[in-house]
Image 1 (cartoon, rainbow, N blue to C red):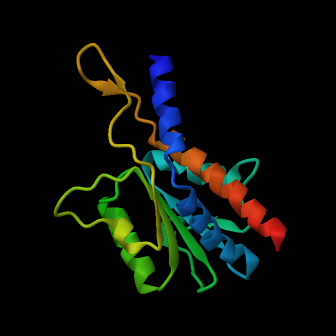
Image 2: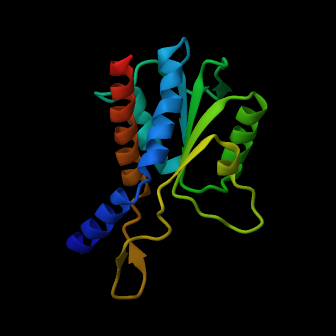
Length: 173
């Protein structure tokens, strides 16, 4: 099982869109080059990325949670927002993305992207959407089910790719 999981996982790592990653890194870097901040909100298992970005050994400078004790941060046009969730049709995330859109905030979104017909997609409201491409768990079981859903692992990998790209951009300025 481990070998199958690893093989499938490496395939998902390799399918991340380099151009989208670079665009996302540039958009987020704009806040750090100027007087802005990056505000992050990650839902459910994606909160692992938020914890890494805010408190990890290699956290980004000038990054803050989008919500403090349930209250939305005071955002400025120089700020950028990074939203993460498992599903692209998550109702809470739709509401947050709508609010960011109303405030003309620049937003990078990251999801495993489950498109359900008829449901509004919060990812349609962001400037750049990083789609992890995870639709199912990776490893088939003897019963025909699957297990090993790596959305948070892929999200963490994507964060580190962004971190490296942002660091490179900032070192050139």
